[in-house]
Length: 157
Image (cartoon, rainbow, N blue to C red; front, side, top):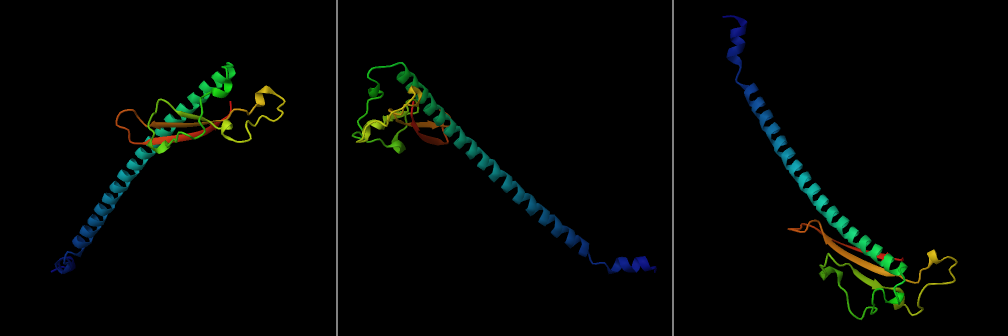
């Protein structure tokens, strides 16, 4: 008998066990990688929905600001009634408010005891006698929304 025949007879299949363990480890690593990829996809979807809702609410608020500025500059009389304000007599709860088409507007400068903040302003462009709080609500999409956002701004025309 030759030397190569004797060494073949002494092998007990240890390489097979090592190869199987390596394949099992590679399969587990692949499963974990798939789970991580799925989680990252869900996270990016949630981020996109949240960002879309925020952008839609921000657009509603900016649209209302443009509308208010146009009314103030047009000289609608009396300018202090843009919009009517009851200084909090009617409570406003932004968390239970879902009117995406109509941002809520409240005039703030009339609610202070010291009145408007128009203190010897040199230029008409620098007037701060009208201060508005604009609260806009919107969703990421109109049908079956997955995310909602509320934007609250202070606007001085």
